[in-house]
Length: 353
Image (cartoon, rainbow, N blue to C red; front, side, top):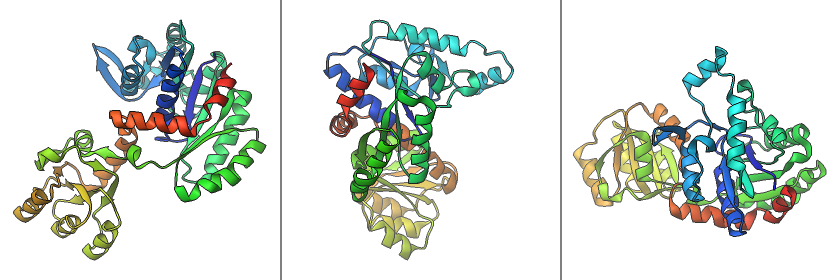
């Protein structure tokens, strides 16, 4: 069976969702699965081995015993980039090739996670496009269509680059009101271009949510009240940068929000406590007054103090959301359920033989 590369057109498109669901499905079908990530960008150390956080997650999720060093042979950091620019890192492709050979030994299927589009890794001499060809692989490409024309451009461009090696495309986080549109118009259009639409995945509240504890850990926040409510679920982040009347109207429409607001905006904080608020993230390092603390404690709403202004914190929140989406067991089960239901597994299996 050929290796299957899962690529994307943009960050946080749902590659881990597809990899997790497909890996579990292949295992259910009796296949011995391998996971390979040529390049990692979330450095972590396990038993003094520099590896990638996603690789550690998948090794556990698929119950693998492969070496982490082989599962992710190249972890990108400032030091490596400097070595490449200075011409000292000349063995990256050879290392990737050797590690892939060891990972694929004895496996029925190797799932390969690419960090971006088909050009990723090009400046290090190992673009995804080349790896697909060299390893005799097939590819699925996934995107969250924020601008549909760009998504379609990306799918068509990928097909032109790798031809029949592209098994098909997947669109993710589609609003329920748009599902019919994608089935009736987007699917037949792509088919005319020679591209199979393998799945249309709707937006899922559980997979889009994170716990207060995850948010706090990722932001390095200090908890000032309601320590026993840290497992609460956050489905939406809002920013308290408007006047209190407008803020209240907006927040009343939200469910399980986390409010990001300056520590000096007592008026917005009070308004949030009248709505469906899971936690408040106060920026600027300002401790809330006794009234806010008392009301938040009574409502069971944790308050997190984080460093930096509101704009900086918002950027950090946006970057963490895609990485936290599949860490809990309930989300793992939900991801497997979604992929089993929405992805044309039989077509993928046929295309890999």
